[in-house]
Length: 67
Image (cartoon, rainbow, N blue to C red; front, top):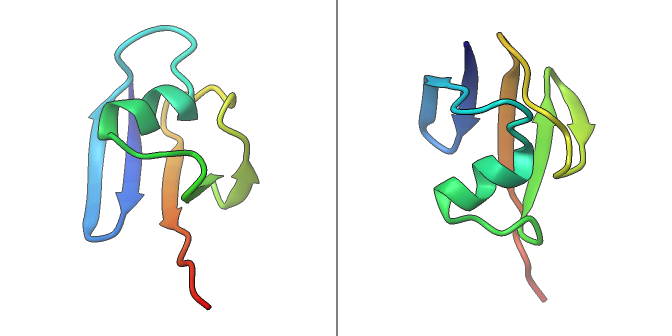
């Protein structure tokens, strides 16, 4: 089972390593914080507890802070 990950210049198919693999699991694997990333699943905003399913497109968008 695979999904597509889009993050910065990354656009790749990835294996779903386990059942109930969540956005939080993916962020942890990539060394990213949910506090600095907005996640989309198939174009819809989702929370970090969302389970990634076969053929999903997951887009991770870095939040930019400024002042």
